Amino acid sequence: MKCPRCGLIVTDLVPKCQGCGFSIQDLDRKLKRHPKRIGFVNDFAGVLSAEEKSWIENQLSEFNQKYGGQFVLVIVKSTKPVKPSEYVFWLFNRWQIGGENHTGLMVLLALSERRIESEIGYSWEDIISDVESGKVFDENVIPLLKEDKIHEALRKGIEQISGILEETAIRLEEHTEEGSASKGSDV
Image (cartoon, rainbow, N blue to C red; front, side, top):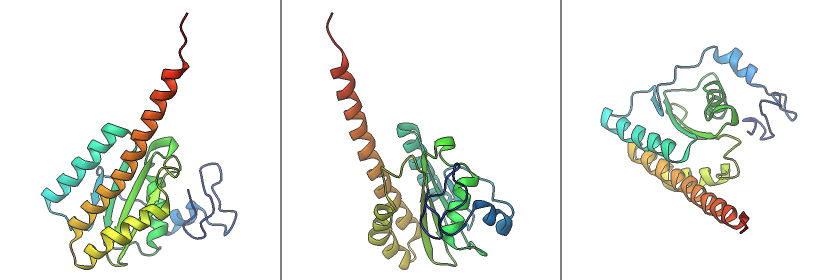
């Protein structure tokens, strides 16, 4: 995954950024304890209705069952004393999103900072880039957030990002099926 400060690679094998010296332990010292994960939807700011939360939870759960990997949404009032980009990186790692292979994605909405961020696990970095997720936010999510349409913005963002992930999963499945079909030989 990319360092939230300078963009170089930081992983379990390279826990300290070679560019700026950042480490997840720096965030541990500043933030102390992470909140307890509730499920795929973690609305610690209390902005979603029960119905809205349930709809998003069902979508993300269905995605998980269909394609594997974890897509998690987090809403907080504030990420202080750190930047939202650092907080999403820290929480993604502390919750171990996507397990050992980091097969997952976390979207963070930080209300006080008026920021939406994503952290993409390294198993999915070839599937959806930071540029693609940023484009989804810029074109589909941020305009709705500016109108205070939080649920609609999150719904649209989740649908768009899920669509990118699903398209790639289908292409990979088709490629695997084609490859396995051509490997056999008649005796």
